[in-house]
Image (cartoon, rainbow, N blue to C red; front, side, top):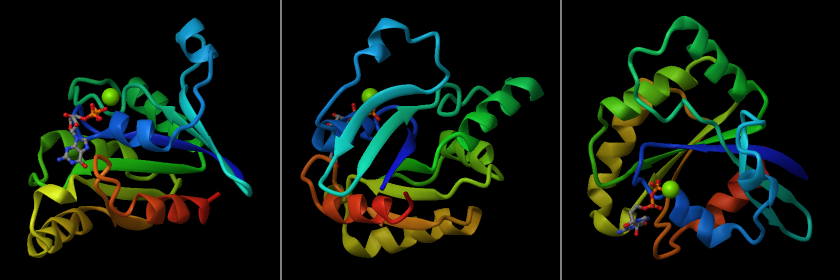
Length: 166
Ligand code: GDP
Ligand code: MG
């Protein structure tokens, strides 16, 4: 099994922390010619039976409300080129405008979206239920997986879930 996974989310939600934990290999081209590709490869995870290529899709995680129709279309089209989207958000914060913007962009691309609620080490499990509900109300996610990228909680489970979509 192999596939492309776009990882998006507001700054500081823990995308790099997650990638640093799971990614074994970084692709050289990403630093050489970042401009030549819309989807920048951030790293590759290779296991016995799978290969996951994590990429960044620029434009989508920037809450610029003045993006024109054309730019919205370009950003959306990049989502069609991937097998799966990981939308990472903070479990310890309520849903804000930046997250709303991202969900708007993700809306109808046809690519499955996994909501990854990160930083569960910072909250009480009871609080998590409310946070999950607030996201679920706004969008139909393929899966919702709470993790702590920093401490590693549930990260293996997330990797298994991802594999299921490749
Ligand atoms: P990015 O901007 O989305 O790439 O976010 P970073 O990976 O740079 O993380 C931003 C900050 O959040 C850093 O200080 C991380 O140490 C912290 N962080 C990331 N994941 C977790 C987590 O699971 N728990 C806690 N408590 N902090 C985290
Ligand atoms: Mg980062």
